[in-house]
Length: 216
Image 1 (tube, one colour):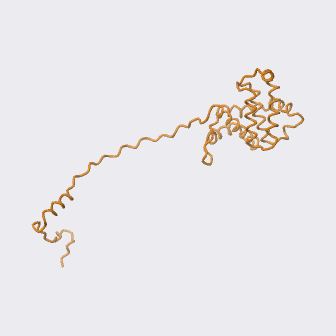
Image 2: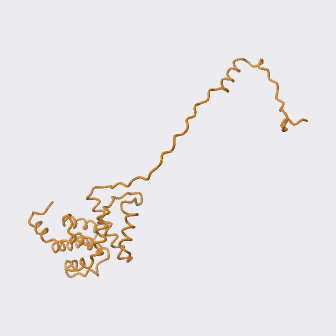
C-alpha cells in the first residue's frame, strides 16, 4: 500500500466537485475563510518606571515631634550598644525615619533636627549631665532608667542649644515622648526636671513666661 505521507509523494486527496456544493454554502465558506485581516497595532513602548520620590508627611510641627521621638530612641540605642552616633544616624535616615512599619506609614521626621539632637546630646554630654544633676533634686542621673536618661539628655540639649523653639514647646514634646513609653509618674518627673533645666539655662524666657509675656 503506498504511503500517502511519504516524503516526495503527493498525498491523494478525495475528489470534490464544486458543482455539488450549494452556492450559499460556498459563499459563506469563502466569506468566512477570506475574512478581512485585522490591522495589528504594534504595542507602545513601555515607559521607564522611576522610583517614587519620598514625600514629607505631616505638618512641620508633627515632623519635629517625630524627630524628638526618634532621637530619644537613637540615644537609647547608642548608650545600650555603645554604637557610634554617626552609624545610628545613618541607619535611622536610611531605614526608619518616616518608613512603613507593619503596614502603617508614620509621619516623616525632620531629619535635620533628628541628627542635631543625637549629635548634640552625645557630644555635649559633659555639659548636659551637670545641669541635669542640678535639676534632678536629690536623684542621681546614673541611677535612672536608660530611656529616662535619653529623654532628659535630648530635652536638655534642645534647651541648652538656644534654638528658636520656645522652651515650653520643647518640654511638652518630651513629656509626650515619655507618655509613649511610661504609664506611671515618669512623664511628671520629665516635666519637673526639664522645667528646672529651662529656668537654669533660659532664665529670661522663663521669667517672661511667668509674667505672662512669653511668646505663644
